Image 1 (cartoon, rainbow, N blue to C red):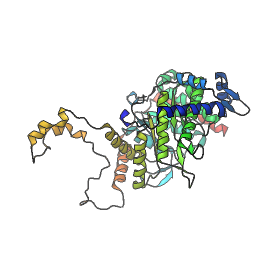
Image 2: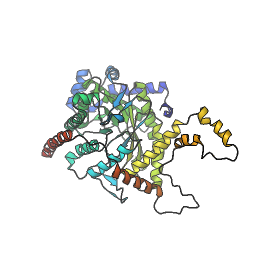
Image 3: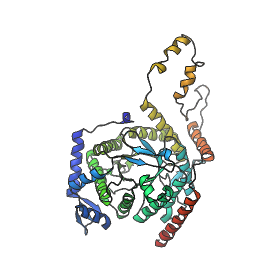
Image 4: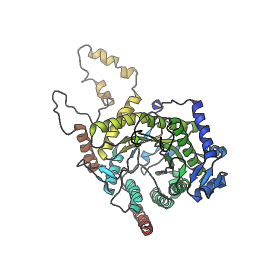
Length: 471
């Protein structure tokens, strides 16, 4: 859907940011808290200091990594009908969130989330047509901490037929995720051919790679699982106050990630990514702003310059129980983040009804972007002539043929000002709650086959014994 793309950086400006990033990588360098990753960089030809956990990356390594990296990636799913390709032509939306709290879809009150909430959110995401893949939307607080991430990962896979994106805190966790996904896909080679999972692994801005995350990235790269290197610089705090300077940090961290990935396993699928934000000058907190959207837009342009797939972080829907501020944040945020032309967009919603509402916002915005057809049939001159002045089009065959093209918002309130009465409870939120209730009662994703479930349970038992023993 190329019509959505908007550009503001010139070719010269992109190349200036590119060259500045290369200068940072070679001269300032990166901090890497993993000997395994430093070994990969040293073997590739980087200047490595093990005592300081430091590496300077020459331009030639970046250029070679860019040659090796695939320019299109296929995101596969348990059900092949949900497969899609990252080809820079249209956006794909992720159900996302992962706070420790959830706004209960029945009571509307905030509480700690559970593994059951992870399952419910996954089922709703599986049902919604504008959600193409999902990350766990909340935390399984009822599970011991060492097993939380793996439990959330498996719960998502069990409750959706779509692609699942997750993260791993260390190499061992990544190995277990790969083993589970391979069991579902039909083996590790089948998983390499049809990656039904991907992983977000984040550098720590500015220019630091912690041991657990980067070693997990290496495991995923070797397995052929797409890795999304989503850095999270905060302009004014962990990156420069200037947006151009923050773009240099974003680009340097993505390029360094790519070098490690491609020299760990040539041709490893990697996605250029950021969740950059701007700090509020009065509080120091991250805020949704036009500055953050410009960073997303600039990052997508740079990713396209390299020919790489791109994922950006979308709106943070924080006002989950208050309709007006939630509508404002979500609608503005989704609209802003459609324009960069990214392959993947994450939208944060920490309740099933919030996700349902976002799905409707996305549908409306995409409909605007698509426009409508103008041809002999849609001009309807013969129908207009037949009905004539003062007539009605309700009984025409043309109306029966085309009326479904007039999209009806699922959150609309059909009461007019004259017939409607002021209500304390917002009718749109009530509609969303009712629809979530119906979805959870009726929508049943195809279960994982019993023999595969048995294998997954055995893997989880091994992981639990290992992880709990370490703690």
